Picture 1: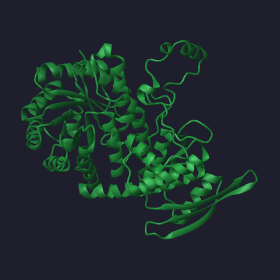
Picture 2: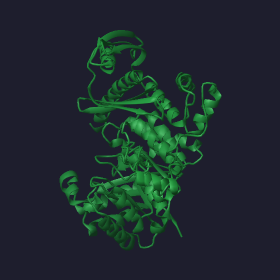
Picture 3: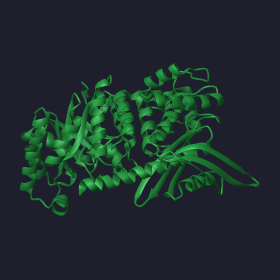
Picture 4: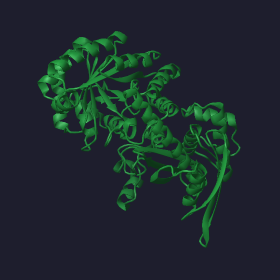
Length: 519
């Protein structure tokens, strides 16, 4: 029989820790809604004690989740301290079913250089803090950070303490992506046999991808008896990232004969989740990414094409529509009304305010006037672009650009400042994109940061498809991204550049906020 493997999504916590992937509360809510549609079992919504912004995001997700069709367990991360655990409990309280996830390192390198704690002190801290978390909920998860580099006898001792204090899930992190599938299998099997011993305790995996083995290690953990996998959409996360949710889920589904385990994930939602997270975080998906990459279901070689024409199973082990990598089926065009658009967006999981719906509808009409049909991928791009503008401090009111083979590229921009002041400036550049960005800089009256990435994507096929532009900026050790969408790529660029400027300001403010909390 196939055993259920819980999917613990940590996109909003570990995923957001990737450089430049900071999300606003509204963006986190949008991702959480899609994770609910995806059917994940647990959402790690954030780290409530890290900052007031993180606390608010976790609390809002805990409140809103009661309105979702599928209500996952909402989880908050907490260091093994009284302050962190109490903050997590307060933030999670509105959720009908919540989990506190606390952690403490167990490897010698962490004990010596980071914590300066003895084995006895670690055991006592784990016992006391897990017991404290258990006062707020019976759903307590404990993680021995850097477990794969820890001494096994000591690791087992600490896990015994956690169980006795009330932990119901033991998460075994490969924090630095150091282990191999064989080693991780042995570690999980040892914990299953020597620590859990048949008790009603769930063993979980949490693998990082520093050596490119995160998914392989996670699957080895499942084979050894783990029944929860921690992962992120698109595999985003610290350094090289985490185990990719879509790869783990589809491996378990496609090779059910090998793993005898399954998830409850609605796989047709994987493509939409991937696109949403990519646009929200600015971390684009490589074309050759398994499951959700643009080339994942593309066949160019003649031999492959011949085989595909004769029988799809010759070169495909799954279908694009199984993972939501095809365009939507509903036809929306210039004659579609506001109510129809709003209803369809709701079916896609987008809950919009009246103001945002008006902005999306206006942009939808602009696009529909230029082409016959607007598909779901283009709608998602439009919603993402409006969401970026919705959190903006500076707002683009007008852009006029002139360029050509025998003309000096010039641009005029009109912006509205955070205080409502209108500013107009003109600039020349090496091309229309450079001129537009220089005009925006002139309006703001400062060089806002160094441009480190400029990327253009078509949301769908066709010369008149909606174009999405992603721009990343860096300044004073901070990085941020912006996304803009328009059928005119220069306008999309200006919107993306301005969104990145606003995001960079928020990141700097958040850094100052977190520094204040730490102090």
